[in-house]
Length: 118
Image (cartoon, rainbow, N blue to C red; front, side, top):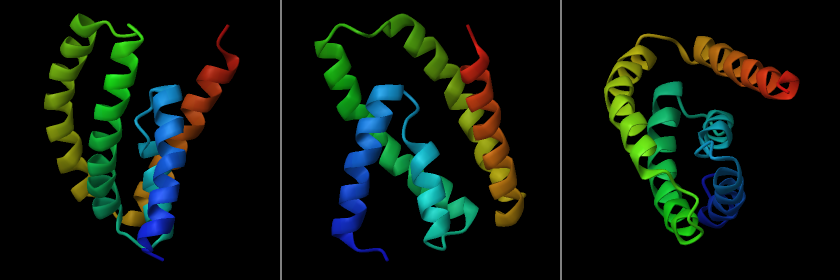
């Protein structure tokens, strides 16, 4: 199921979703990779390659539209560098089954927060 054409077409969908929502695409890529049989650790790591490529493209598009606060983005990004190192260590400590439950819980919680927010 690692057909390059299918993965590329899925990438188009992820790119549209990521650029539209700002969620980076991991919320779609990680479940796909888990479905394809990747371990949680490999799914998360592979997702970041996807996110990097999509994020650069989305950054260019949003920059042309003047939709970026570079200062805020850089401060959040610098904090994210530290958090990413911690998160990568955490994901190594849990099973794929537990990861799936945690990931699903985070998605449901975010969906509820956004849905019920005024």
